[in-house]
Image (tube, rainbow, N blue to C red; front, top):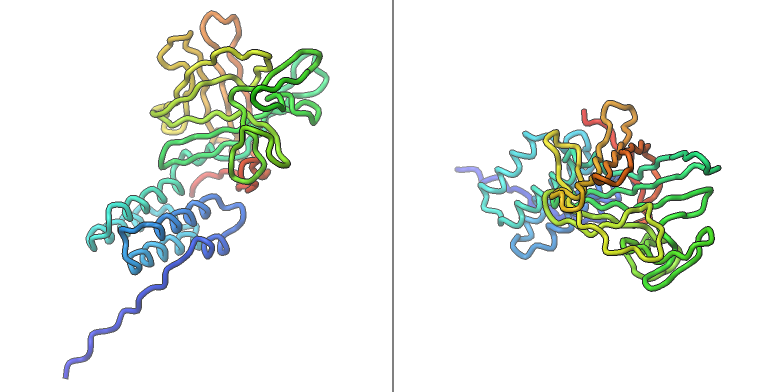
Length: 305
């Protein structure tokens, strides 16, 4: 007689909490995989067995960091989803998760700190750039502060419509400032224990933002300047600024210095033409300080094997 066909056991679905419990607390790539699991489980276009197939795959990547960005393995999995008729939404969720975990843009993601010494100022200026990257959307977000002798120098620690006195001068709310308290949300009023940070956020080759610089400490900040961000041909350097040259063409270049071990970060500021100021470079090093946005720390970027 013929043997019965083998019974293939159905996989149990994985929840994002299971992924988070299995990864190191500093593992941002693992957190993206947990988000991918959560997004998969919220899709109505997938059956429970299809969700289980995807979430088990993402969980396997989470607990096996060495294979997360193996292109052949990931392509084979995507091909299997297509051949088995998984929904476009499901396939796109997996693709976006791969991008968020594996993109070279992640070399920008870190809590970066620079020290700047200026003649006549007895204490160095500490500049913080807490950078967050969503490589799937191209969204880059920077939360920034200047600190002198342990005191936040900019932005002014006041909310919209408020003023304070700094070194004898009246200064107002910085138009790009948001209040962060580690909750994962941004506020426009002081909300709990936290601080005001200047937020600059753009989509590479997409949506720009109205910019007022971190170093501005004014009573009236004026209209600001619309800027955009693009990725240069090297695939790693970002150019952000007045790219259509409508206001003098000033821009910043941001890039991780991959030849350094550990990786450092460079911000080159090219001032608008006719301003009389020279370009300058800030050199940042990475720390594993918790982000003021979500109170989560991240490992410093390292070169892919």
